[in-house]
Image (cartoon, rainbow, N blue to C red):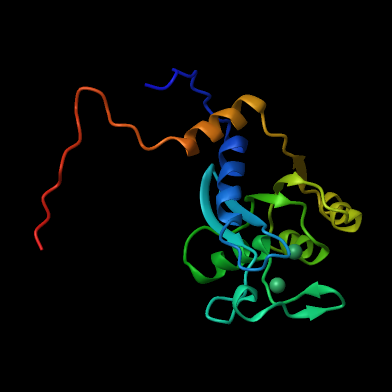
Length: 178
Ligand SMILES: [Zn+2]
Ligand SMILES: [Zn+2]
């Protein structure tokens, strides 16, 4: 039996930033594993990671597509999350909060402003002051997220453990009719 630990209940920012990490892991260009989650009224309305447009060859398979030293094959996570709202019917990005692993590039910053995002929460600030200035100029609330150490410990524990059985109930075997 593992040591009992005190449950850390994540804030909304903790919660969505943890989801961002998982989303980023789906990336298919090793130049940068970034990810973004678009949230409205504390509900996820879209997610996006750095990757080739769906259906096209990926950097993992065919190598990078370089232009001036940057890989331009991928759609960035922030952009992909915004584009997802264009493909799936549902809430728009207008007034939403965008959670992202890194501060956006200048292009994504433009799209974020144009899509009407009101707040952006980022894990790390990248070396691109122009994008940050643009977000601030547009009146977007910018939060640089700092992961709480207790939450970090809880996250490690969550991912290290198997899904525990519920006490006194055992595991129900579902009968399948195939
Ligand atoms: Zn690439
Ligand atoms: Zn970008």
